[in-house]
Amino acid sequence: MPDSSVTDDAAKSRIIKHMNADHQDSLVRYLEHFSYLPPSLARHARIVDISLDSLTLVSSGIRTVIPLDPPMANWSEARERMVKMDKAAIAGLGRSDITIKEYAPPAGRGAVIFVLCLTTLLVFRTRRNFEPGSWLYENLLANFPAVCSFFHTIQPWVLYPMFLLHAVEAVHFERTRLRHHSVPRWSRLWWLYVLTHFVEGVTSFWRFDRLVERKKAEKLKEKH
Image 1 (cartoon, rainbow, N blue to C red):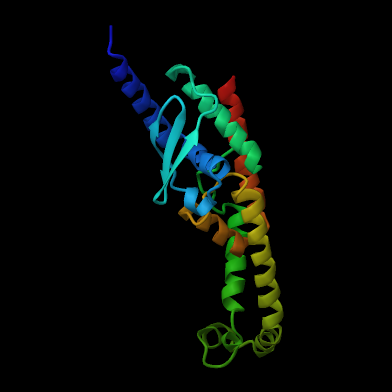
Image 2: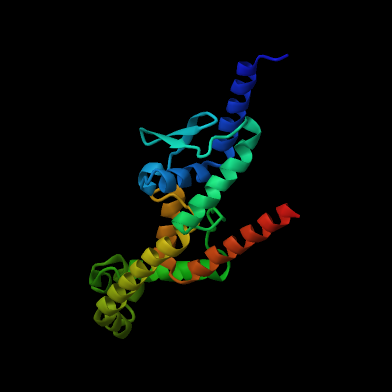
């Protein structure tokens, strides 16, 4: 008959390894929901120990023990309990059960819009671009004085409204898309999406939503 302590250690090791490798997003939600940690502190969540009555996690140097109530009767209940905890966290946090872990870059029409918006921001970032002595004036605009004068006049009316609109959209995108789909705030993925959206604007909403729909379809297919 196998030693029960050895069996328990093996079961714990499998659970810890599986959750840390494949369900780190769930661990982040555990800390946010059950331990009330802010996303910035919960984003590095990892299980360091598990027993039949508690789950011990560490993130950003903070060690947290989450009680399992009621305690599990045996290790075979672990998978179902982890799933139930994640569902409770998702509901409590108002999150989606679809976690986005990949970056969807601008492509096709979106790439064209991204380049146009980025060019506009760079060209209209200062009126000096439309004055003699600037690289843009000397190399492209010197032979088009009327166009150059027009751009010089409208520069603040192009830059500031565009900057403000895209900044507001980026905040809305972060709150309604990135946070909702558990993209860790301040992570590399988070910055890629926020900066892309700030430049591109509304079309990045559409691209992100298409990615979410694809992930939903993949998840539904896995269930059948």
